[in-house]
Length: 143
Image 1 (tube, rainbow, N blue to C red):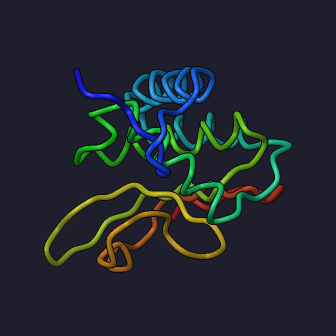
Image 2: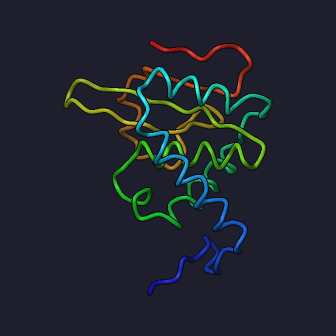
């Protein structure tokens, strides 16, 4: 069995693994919701959280991908949801985004912090956000 290693080569603590697993489990359930309901649930979850810094969101993404092969793979929706939820469990909230592009057609979900996608490939900029849930107190947009 392979070991899960932290970015510095050490094994993350039990608490880190437990909270990341909890976020992944919740994300898998939320990923089944219709978009409007998902946006509502995330809007409620983000209340009271401060905006996440890039390094905090990246750390959450790394923790999520370290404990879940589903999130470490090509499944962007559960990965982005788990990252946002883990950030929230730590007291902050990134901007959660879901968008589409037309050429070639595709859909993608990701998180942003400090105005840039967190841990995403450069082609993420080709997606037009359709739903965003930011840490701001005003309502998030649904385009």
